[in-house]
Picture (cartoon, rainbow, N blue to C red):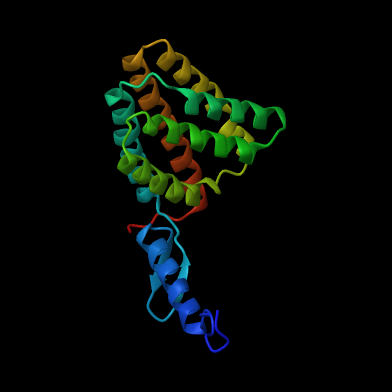
Length: 190
């Protein structure tokens, strides 16, 4: 490098531009909201948002499992093992993370990067709601057994029963979250 050539450095304008881009992306992904003259804040979901997220989850997850011809359940099995490890350490947040990975693995069975991206966004939004569960153990622990049941149905080739079990599972989770969320938040009509 010549002495008179100065390497590029990041200017404050570049940093502002990068931050603006990050905010725009998070707003687009529905994780932040922007109010004129008030700035940007973490989005607060309504009960209706929770219901809608579960409606989308049922279509994506049940559809992915039903349409898949994959017999490689390695990622789902790894997520179950992570859940068991977290449970043995009483790491309830870790168990929740393993549960999210399990559902991502179910969608990955469809082999579609677009579905996987869509599911990632849905689960990111849903994490904005999980904080209302006062006792993470009570919320997350039962789903580990359900994940094991789903994995067993898939590995045995009983895909139709797996889809129905998953639909019932998501109905239960939706009901549980809506009930907890209703106690925490006033109902809005966003």
